[in-house]
Image (cartoon, rainbow, N blue to C red; front, side, top):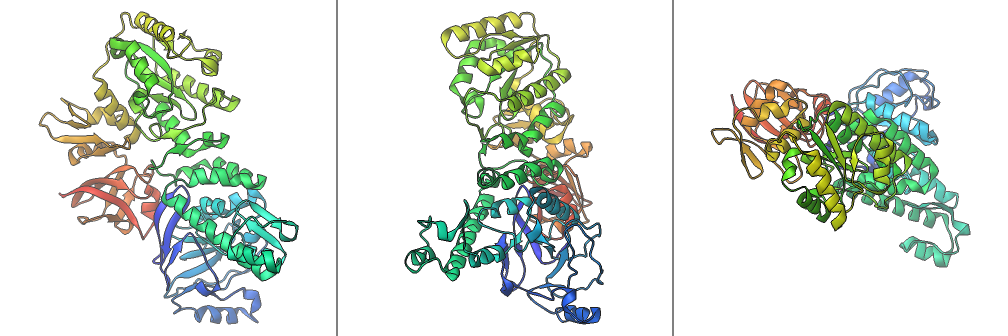
Length: 580
C-alpha cells in the first residue's frame, strides 16, 4: 500500500503507472541517479548507527529515497536486519528475491542482485516471488538489467522501473546494442542504425562515448515501443515476437507461462485489440486457458439431442463468414433442433452462443491446414471433457482434413460428412443433419440461449437461470422483464452490461460483487473505498457494487484482490448507481 505510486493501465503483469515524486515519473520508466537519492550499502558506513543516521537524513526528501540496504548473495539471507523507517516522501527499500523475510512497507522496491539474474529460471522465479510478496500498488525497480532486447520481457514480467547501467557498461566494453541483440562494435562493417551517434561513428570510429549514447538511445526507443504496446493492449503479441532474439528470453517466457496463477490474476477479462495466436506459446496464454475452462465448467449447453461440429472461419464472429452462412442455409429449419459447436485453434471449442465473447470474436491465427501434436491434444482433450459433461444422442461432424482426422482418432462416435463448402459437401451436411434431427426435441429461442450462455460465462453457473427468470422480452441486443424494464444488454465487445434490475437478480449468487463502505460513490469508485471484492474479478469484468447506502453496476478497472490490497487507483468505473 502506498501514497506515491498508482497503476493507471494494465495488460497482464505489464503496467503503466505514475510515481508521485518531484517531478512525477510515468512508468514503465528508465531512471537515473538524478531521479532518486540512496543511502547505499550499510557496509559503506563505519557503524550501523552511521547507516541509521544516513537514513534519518532522507526523511524529508521529495525525491524517491532509497534506505540503507544489506547486500546478500542471490540465494542467501541478509546478514543484518535494519529497523523500519517512515519517510515524509516516497520510500524505496531493497528486497532480496529469494528471501523468506517479509519486506518492509515501501513505495518502491529495489530488486537486490538483479544484475545476477542471468538464468531464465532465476529471473522468472525472482520477479514472480517478489511481486507476490509486495503490495500491487507499489513499484518494482530492477537495476543493471535492461537492454533494448530484453526490456519488453522485463516489463511484461512485472518490472516498473529500469535503468541504463548495463548498456552504459557494455558501451565501455565496445558492445553495440539494438532490440535484435548485441554485437561487438569493432566487428560491424556497417552500423544497422541511422541515429546521430551512429552517423558520427561512421566517420570518427567506434568511440566509447558514442557507443554509450547509441545504446541509451536504443533503450529509450524500446521503452516507447513497449509503452505503446501496453496502451494498445498488444504487449503479449509484442513479447512473443521479441523473445525470439535469444533462447534465454524464449525460455523465460515459457517459464512465465508455467506461472499460470501469477498471470491469470493479472490478465484482463477482455482487450480491445485483436488476439493474435502466432506461435506455439499462444496455446498457453491465459485468455486461451480461461476461455476453455469456462466453456467446460461454467457454460451449460442447451438440452439438445443433436450436436453439430463445425470448423472455424477467418472472419469473426463466425456467423458473418461466407462458410458459416452456407452451413446455416444447408441446415435450414433443422437449426432449431441441434446445438452447434465450432472447433478451432487455439480456443479449442466455441459454442455458437459464445461466438461474440472475447476472445472468440476477435482472434486470428495462421491458417495452414496443419494441426501439430500439441494443438490436436489440446483440442481433443477439451472436446472429450465437454462431451463428458454435455450428453448428446447423435453427433454430426462437418469437418475435413487433419481436423476431421484428429476428432476421429479421439474415438468420438459421430457421423462424419467430410466437410467443405461446395455443393456436394453442403448436400452431405444437409442430409446428415436431417437424419440426425429426426425426432429431436426443439430448442428454445436461440436469442435467449445466447443470453443464458453469456450470463453463465461471465458470472458463473446459475447466472443465466436467475437473469432470465419469468417472462423475458428480447429487444435487439437488450433483454427486458415483463414490465419492459431493462435487465441487460450485450455490448459490441461481447460482454454483458447489467442494468440495476439485472444486477439485483444476480446479487444472491454472491459473485463479482464489490463491497464498499457507508457512502454513495460519485463518479468512479476508488480502491480505498473498497471493503471487500470477489477474488474472481479481473480488469474489464462487469461487477455489482454493494454498500450500506449504495447499489450499482460498473466495469472493474483492477482485479478483486488488487482492490482489497491497494490504496490508490480506480477500482470500478461505475455506470449506474442508486442510493438505498
